[in-house]
Image (cartoon, rainbow, N blue to C red; front, side):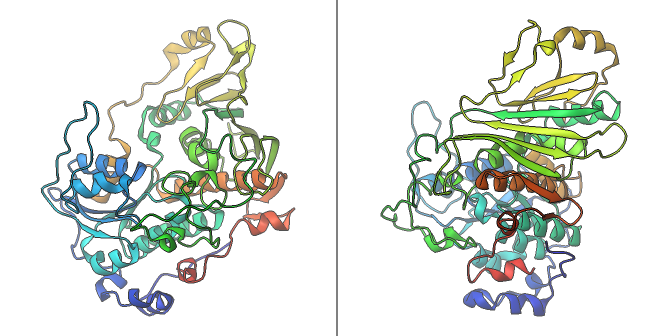
Length: 487
């Protein structure tokens, strides 16, 4: 894996971007990472750009904007004529035609300030880098990395949707870049990490209530987009490309030349190994983030696909059900060796064991959630920011007096990021925290894709028992995108 990446200089940046042609000549203030502002004062707003403005990106954008802490100065999307980007384009002045309003939905209110529009994030950074304080990256999983790494190198704060990146190696580079640029605020969009579960877990762990966890089950069993068509898919489908979509830019750095298909864009990309993280990468950050961080799990020694159902024979699409176990060594006092078992698939549901239920009978776990099994205490919780409860209920009642209180009036994940950009808070999910979490999911996906147990060297960050699996840690990028891998 890449180690000790060198800092970007003006000369190395210009050399590395030569393949970009028209995108080579950046202003010296941008190349060197100096800002047009000396900083954002307490009464000033963050100048925000957004890359990926439809669907989840549009929701992220509006939440950041509605915080009142930022001005939206630039919008970038490879599909600036797409229906899914229409709302953001209208609100921020890139089109005068309002999108259709259905049902009881109120008419959209336009921002008083007009943003500039781009289809290529490289052009946006070229033209406006000195005017941008922070950027939202909410593109499909496979295209998070180049935009995020360039933002860091330019001194621009960056909020990246989960999972942080598509491969283990991309995550590693983002972690190192964030470490090399400590003044740049980074945040991943696992929004529950600013919710009650974060503050409860922190308080209960520090008080010794959560300790000696030897097993964790995490489960997400809702239907997924690829259910019903995965096993029969033997090649990428093809559809007529809609006008205005830059498909070459959509493919980004992935070295797979897939044709345009409605089963890839605008919302189906997560179904495919080459472009998305499947259920594990999608929901894992919302279920295991607090466990991973506070229990100091780090990276596993072994990942085992216990059961896979509805497997795609062409290895293109995620299976319809997965049970994957990850084994972690002991990490210090109160942190014994721990097994984390992941369940997805509509019928592939774990059960809460009878000794921990109120009824005394095993209970199937239906809602997305997790169970933490300790030597003395068992904790059950749902997803995102939902707080844990001790099970069974009588055990919780008996411990009530010793359970510490925790703050429930905190900034949400988006506000936390913007306040961190202003120097008023610390980001809760910086890349040094969220990067190793997502590397865990990358390892799980490799085991899932190959249907093989993998053995991992935690110190060297290498898969040691399978060369095919090892190659999937850090696949080479598409031609023309190599420079981002040396930043």
